[in-house]
Image (cartoon, rainbow, N blue to C red; front, side):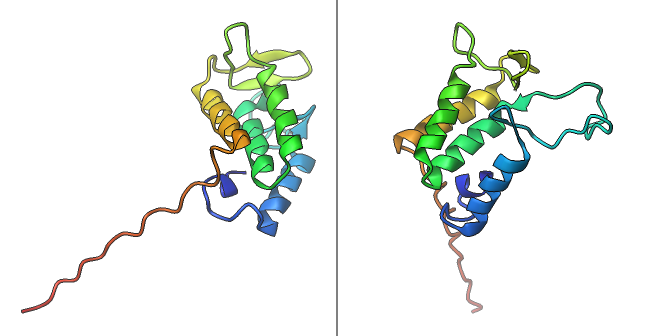
Length: 143
């Protein structure tokens, strides 16, 4: 999901659109994005129990949706994510939609940074990262 956000490929590239669709199909649970697929009988991370949806990944999806022109879908996910904040507007690292609880590190700066990036993308203030400036090469002449 970071591919269009950091400017590696343009948002209208078919690979970007295909990646967004694959994430939606394979890593979404209850409307939020997991970091990786979970298996009940063989946990991917080797830890017992299930992991919640990773909020940064969910914000990335909302931002990527905005960038590929799916503004309404992006807003809908963004509003669902904003609704998870506590009484002072803070978010944790993860969210468990089944229990309605925030999980993991709290508060989590990573979640908040991507909340801001997504808000900027939805407001039109942020697009793909600008290309890195070309490094000026100087030539030395042998005298």
